[in-house]
Amino acid sequence: MVARVNTVAFQGIDVKPVDVQVQIASGVVAFNIVGLPDKAVAESKERVRAALHALGLSLPAKRLTVNLAPADVAKEGSHYDLPIALGLLAAMEIIPKGELEEYVVLGELSLDAGIRAVTGVLPAAMHAGVNDNKLICPEACGGEAAWAGDIDILAPRDLLQLINHIKGTQVMSRPVAALGDQGPVRVPDLSEVKGQETAKRALEIAAAGGHNLLMIGPPGSGKSMMASCLPGILPPLSPREALEVSMIHSLAGTLPDGGLLKYRPFRDPHHSASLPALIGGGHRVKPGEISLAHHGVLFLDELPEFARATLESLRQPLETGEALVARVNSHVTYPARFQLIAAMNPCRCGHLGDPDLECTKVPRCAADYQAKISGPMMDRIDMQVDVPAVKVGDLGASAGESSAVVGARVAKARRIQEERYAQFETKGFTVNAYADGKILEEIAPLQDEAKTLLNRTMESAKLSARAYFRVLRVARTIADLSGAPESIGKTHIAEALSYRRVSIN
Ligand SMILES: Nc1ncnc2c1ncn2[C@@H]1O[C@H](COP(=O)(O)OP(=O)(O)OP(=O)(O)O)[C@@H](O)[C@H]1O
Ligand SMILES: [Mg+2]
Image 1 (spheres, rainbow, N blue to C red):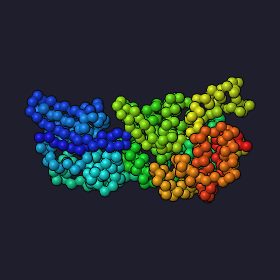
Image 2 (cartoon, rainbow, N blue to C red):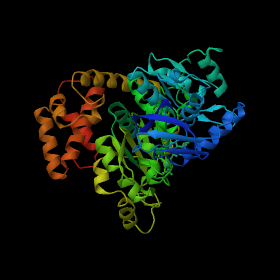
Image 3 (cartoon, protein in one colour):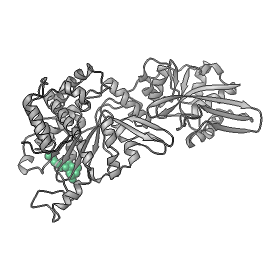
Image 4 (cartoon, rainbow, N blue to C red):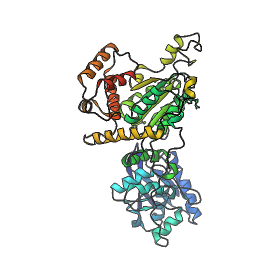
């Protein structure tokens, strides 16, 4: 007789059902797990054996076989402990076999039979909901599972509590949905940034339309400071976005306090970050920084210091909004619709253009330093602004607009975009940055003067077709910030072009 328990395997954010089959047969005493388990799954038998021992149960001296079907799907992670233990308990007739049929089970066991938190509970709970199943997950993950809608959830603290519930001696209640992040961590307010009006305006436009932005300037001019103001001016995630982003963070195990994310992620990996850390993958495939920044911001400070291959690997996700991770015999994709904010010095000494401070290698040092960012990469950055050194006079100036005031304008422009894209069959985007050619033609018609200016600059500055559309998107956002007129005017195009560091004539 074979006991069966349902669990899941993860491929990207896709969830595949896995059937845990446990057989106790006579023969040589053995305990085998088959069905493409990775090391963590293979080690699970020691944890299961110890956990049952902690409850005063020992495994029968028979041939125990655990099969994780289908056998061609790789099983990674430690969440197979609990389904394997429950399968064994059912096969040993300690719990009734039929009881678990409707449940999807995941959880890691500790040696004292406690049930430890695992990654991926939210997508597993959504999967259970879609298939009219119930869920058993660790207590620590109950708050995140409860967001998956109206499904029955058991979130036991340990194996004994679960067995008692199944036997009806102790009834567990459904966990309550938890909110993980209670607000953006303390970030500097925009009013603390003195001067830098152009850069602040560019930051506001980038925040409003989800555009990529590169800030170039000497050391200590406020580039990193302005970037860290961004979480304070971005609106919170919509409920649908929150669920999407939280699923990715659930798989990566980075959900704060086991609850849903409410605010847009702001990820700022160090420039020593490896390619798998940024894009995803690694020995045990995990979402990378670009996916953790989905619907939020990826801030790359000191851009030229990132490894060349790492930067180039951003090219495809920047266009498609997806991270494609190659595995030995398959591919997995993670959503990665992020907004790239980057900062860099104009050259290694950092003072290019300042006769008092620049080094003797000018202009070669600047050419070498800036060449670390490839042309195609630059082409994908919608806005590039100079952030000059702050003047002493500016430092004493009174405070400018606060993040709250700028944030209100950003939120208004985002609402306009949301309503606009709701009428199109868009693939889930709500900001101008993702409008493609055809939709763009419809939503950003150019006035004659604007068209002439754009076409002339395109010719003279040799802008690429990509740059053409990116300028249009930025111009659409500038128009949205200024009351959302139907068509794009010359001033909107001129301002958008000014952020591409081209001379306008
Ligand atoms: N425009 C500014 N207004 C107010 N304070 C500023 C400004 N620019 C810089 N500062 C002060 O200088 C500190 C350093 O600035 P920041 O780290 O943003 O410089 P940076 O441009 O990123 O320099 P680097 O190129 O060396 O990374 C800030 O924490 C802040 O205290
Ligand atoms: Mg900096």
